[in-house]
Length: 299
Image (cartoon, rainbow, N blue to C red):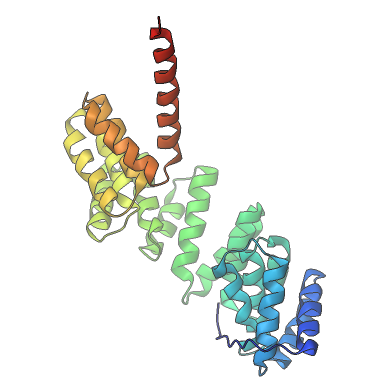
């Protein structure tokens, strides 16, 4: 999102009416006229507040970060940037079809940010080939989003199509560490094609850099080797220190396999307490079995 927002508790009736009609115009797909109307009111703090309220009323379940997109529209540099922010706002509240349409208008005006977000949005929508084509255009154009587009495109080809060829490796390598998941995705690919030393080197580097996505993948790879269990345990413990509850669950399973039942149970409880659904399910099943066993013991 680009631009700044200004808010004021005072809202004039005219601004409240305009804000409501603007949201209706957006939902009807009249994006350009809606953005032009919003921009013409950008100096009004009353409209800012009214517009934010109208958006929150239209999507009451939306997260604050999603609603924050909308407050930037009126402070966009121009209508193209306004369309970009509108598209981002629509995608953020789950209106993907409308969001993609707004982003496409901004992208047609040469907005690279919009082109990148359009590609991502289309992947989410299942318009895979369209999304990939737009991401390829971003990579070819270079600039700020080149690495991110390469990472998203490369992972789509790897994860969805199962491709592990040089084009995919080149894309995922180009992505570097632009996002936390990108180097971890590349390591996963290397492990899959038998390039384990490179996979381990990437994951160890990322773990030492504090990337919380790396320890669990490193632990999973190491745990496959009976001689690597101590190192796997150490990796999972780093993941736990970085706040990853899934690492706690996997550590619990590793310890259980080793017969370290008390430690296993403790980490299973920790994982459940920190939101791991598998751990919660496993504890619930254990409780049911215990209750049934207790009933059978009654004489």
